[in-house]
Length: 217
Ligand code: B1M
Image (cartoon, rainbow, N blue to C red):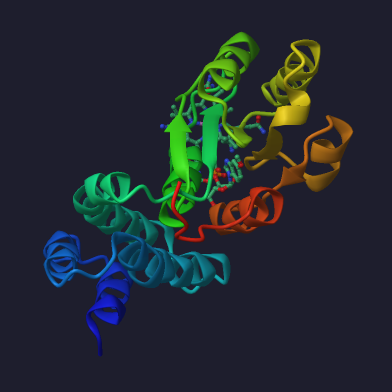
């Protein structure tokens, strides 16, 4: 098995002690950082995401793999930046106003990062004004909102409306998710997509804003 396959395998096993060392080893062997990301880390996280969606893996296992991914990324990120690699796109995520649930949103963020996106997490209880302000400032390609309460779902609509009012709607794609959210609700509020789980959020992002290519910025 080559080193990149090993990185992918160990990530799938959630071996967060070994992963930074393996990434370091790959860098020492002068394997391009973009290749370590796409053929090692992203490839491994894709397998994890697929298994999670098919209920072959459960959340604790995904979280350990995501931790391994993040530890590998900590070693790789400076080298990616140095080599001028363009990440797949910038995505702002947040749990909507008055909603404090963040476990699912964090998982979505981890898998998106695992797929090579730059994720900016605005946290929980994020107001429509804050979403708009951050879209203006950070210029993401996509905004992802999470809501776990039926009472906070309408905030998603408010965010879409605020984006329209501020003239930013056409510049960003919007996806929504969370246990009470449905495809129909997403359509009704004018979002571009709905994802029932974290792995589907990655698929949706790939469809809406493209995937990681390893190209220079
Ligand atoms: Co609360 N809570 N909670 N809670 N809580 C629920 C959601 C509830 C269904 C429990 C119940 O009554 N059976 C219920 C909501 C009912 C409703 O409105 N339909 C509920 C309630 C009522 C409340 C309070 C009001 C309780 C109270 O105080 N009386 C209160 C509200 C606080 C607030 O937000 N203002 C409250 C508080 C809390 C805790 C703080 C104690 C805690 C949250 C801790 C935290 O998140 N840091 C909590 C928890 C843990 C839950 C349950 C038990 C678990 C939620 C969870 O993390 N699931 C939940 C009951 C349940 O679901 N069994 C419940 C695991 C997580 C991985 O799944 O978040 O669905 P989920 O995310 C999935 C998908 O939905 C999707 O992908 C994820 C992974 O595959 N997804 C996205 C999520 N976001 C996405 C975004 C995307 C795409 C996909 O694109 C951007």
